[in-house]
Picture 1 (tube, protein in one colour):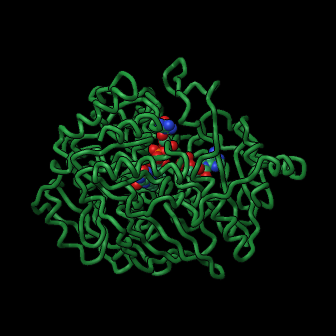
Picture 2 (cartoon, helix red, strand yellow; picture 1 turned 90 degrees about the vertical axis):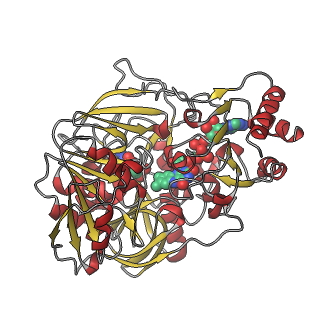
Picture 3 (cartoon, chains in turn orange, brown; picture 1 turned 30 degrees about the vertical axis):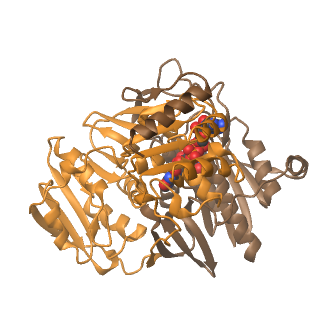
Length: 307
Length: 254
Ligand SMILES: Cc1cc2nc3c(=O)[nH]c(=O)nc-3n(C[C@H](O)[C@H](O)[C@H](O)COP(=O)(O)OP(=O)(O)OC[C@H]3O[C@@H](n4cnc5c(N)ncnc54)[C@H](O)[C@@H]3O)c2cc1C
Ligand SMILES: Nc1ncnc2c1ncn2[C@@H]1O[C@H](COP(=O)(O)O)[C@@H](O)[C@H]1O
């Protein structure tokens, strides 16, 4: 059996869940979706890709809580050590995967891009290396978003629902207090046809001028990778990727971005990706349509001159 | 309060990564290592708490036979009160499960209210350490943390989800937090200050072992991902390439 942990937030099932369900269906040993929450029974109708649903509802599961979710899943999945458990390699999954591995004594493989009964592939070293792990028997896979098609697993239908009760969750040391929505930024990068996206290759804040000029000439918006936001050079609303925004522009020009899996998640569906990166081994070139290893400080001004 | 920060070195991805003879791991002999960037954020988060309200900050690392001393001295120069090297059989790749076992054996003797790790490292095939370590220590955990607000024996923390959405949690100590980003950019420490720390700081050594604990699965092979559907690489001078890029962009009707 393959157990797929359903991820949902604000009443919406996340794409990663459908991606995992679609893949799980092809593995041939049956699929059980595991749904935790409160008042989420209505979501089961979207889990038609699964053969069965294990549903656990409790007021303490109304919002994700690392402790409550790990404790509940450990109790529901106890004894399933010969099965495969799939969880998203997401913010929530990064608590659940290791939490279950520790609690159930099952092996855990992270950053998974493909899996079967015998082997599992992970993207490590910022996407620069793939690693194939041999497996026999049960394991937990923490699956990277975007590895499988969501359409294959997004099937409405009503699989049989088995209701299970939660363990006592009244005394958790972690308490959810609230969900904070992102602040609206000065631009909405998801609405632009052209994005000039800048990464750590730009070196410092002053150099942002170089890419800003290109963005201006193209009437494009400036977006960026995470380190640029962590350095406070650009606002969070411009971040593309796992913890930023998903974008799908006509043209995405990645300037000095390595293409770590967490960045790729946010932009791989762009129509045309052009990557400028001096490292010929940068993973961004695996996803780009056009690439150059010219120095950004040479090629970007040269592009501007021609516009 | 006592804060323990665990750090480790990871291969610097700027360098070319070569495989070993069996194709199951990196050839570590010539690799350049650096402190995991998220660990710098974890240390910064600890030092910010220390600056704001006082705290005792201990930085711990497994002795990997590399330059970990330098990393520990740098941590001391930034403001760590104590630096500890965990000695044992930790050369080469150490799985997250094994690291959790070894660190889990040492940390109780350091009396931690709060343990901070980096959210992840580029080489953690068997999952991220923070949660595994929390389990070893019997502590609460929250990972992907971007903000910590300590009040008494608990903290309010921000955990980042996709799209910039944040879950806010109240966590009772003792707890392990996996740090994605500190509230401030990690502080810079001049080399002269690190040199002084090398003279003034004593690295404590505590031994531990993680015998019998590993990732639970074997690496069959490691390889550079095929670039089958990869990019068409543009050649010529920067000017030629620029012209081609303009053509491509215009070709998309923008
Ligand atoms: C839970 C989690 C969520 C995350 N979410 C995100 C996210 O939403 N978005 C995101 O982007 N990252 C995210 N990250 C971080 C991600 O793992 C990487 O650290 C990040 O994407 C790297 O950014 P970068 O490519 O700009 O920097 P680097 O990886 O440092 O790459 C810089 C690149 O610039 C190139 N370069 C340097 N100089 C030049 C030059 N002169 N000309 C041309 N090229 C040059 C280098 O060759 C290098 O490839 C997340 C990480 C975690 C753990
Ligand atoms: N061997 C180790 N020694 C010390 N700290 C570690 C070790 N492994 C992991 N960590 C800590 O946990 C973080 C996440 O690592 P990992 O779980 O390997 O992704 C690292 O950045 C460190 O903060």
